[in-house]
Length: 508
Image (cartoon, rainbow, N blue to C red; front, side, top):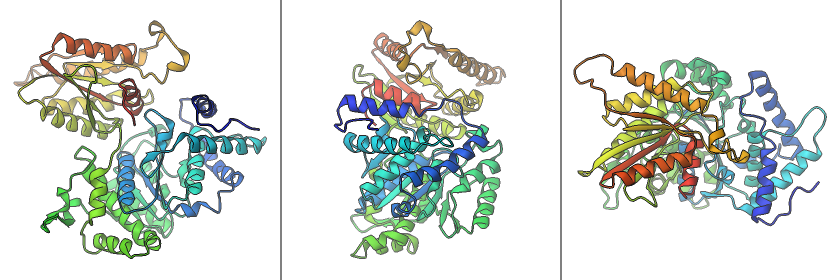
């Protein structure tokens, strides 16, 4: 059955998006039994699409973790692209356009290629659907789609970010990756992955394969012990990556400098750790596979420089410096009001929100320049999360840096409602009211000690009916105080960040 005419126009694209939306099974996460069955079905889908024997041709780099895995993948991709390889990058979620998830040489896939493979993949799976199996759900379908596109376009390397967990993630049907990486581990998706760090760590380590080297950033002791145990069980060589200050490079004048002096394209102190992991993954990939693509011996020279001499070559430096990852530690000015600056970060775990607050505080203060600053926060998070565990580290870190906002606005995302065209007076903001009450309770408790220096700064707590109302409120504040600089932190959810970027006319 034909599902679309390949023309790449808006009607074709809308038709393709509707097919994808038909695969969305619901907002609630599946329980463990359903998830395991869904992963087992990936083998069936691979067979239907004739992908089983061709997947090793992707020469994949596979990255799991709780925070920083998308950033790490983006840095790896940038490094290897600077080295001259044809790169494929698969990440999730997207911010504005689903095509962001599948990138070739750093650019989201073009509409014609995306639609061609979407319609073909859907058609094959639909025709071969049996009574014992249906079509894959949304993320698994996109994973299969990315495999087909990367193989069709003959990428040299596929950099794959795990969607959720690792052991049962759709991307884990890659059985022969070249190298694996694990970013910082913490508490997230506990209803699926487990409620202790060792349980979560074991799920993340599920991407380890026998004989495939794996690398990790430093972890909490119990997490590291679990990673080492799983590595031993699977006969996976596992190492903790060296810190950036253990590397060196030579600048244009030939002066030897510390690797920690390289200016990372992604903002935030936490990106130093992600960069250290990315450098190791890229170098090991070049040493194990890249050397076969490089006829001039440059791949071996670069990887030896890093792995043996701890010297970062110029291609790696350029990749690190030019790396971009939209919606993460991003800063831009309002196109309509010149006294508004947005600080956007899709942090959505306890640890990442603390890091986000630290980044925002530093970046906001650096822009004071004798100006009077009014700080605002726009916040939302998914209902499956514990709001106190997110808002407490955000509030604590801002308090420590003396950058608590004058107002925090809790707003629903557009994504949940636009398809229904729900008017503002019918939108359910019960969850946003819960977030507001949680922030207020934490705020009152923080300043109820009566200790010297603990005078409570003024902070309004507001529930907004929509992002358009939120944006209007912020812009009206800027008009009311034209001599002040308005700094707006948007955080808590990548869906919130994506919707705000879209509303503000930014691309991703």
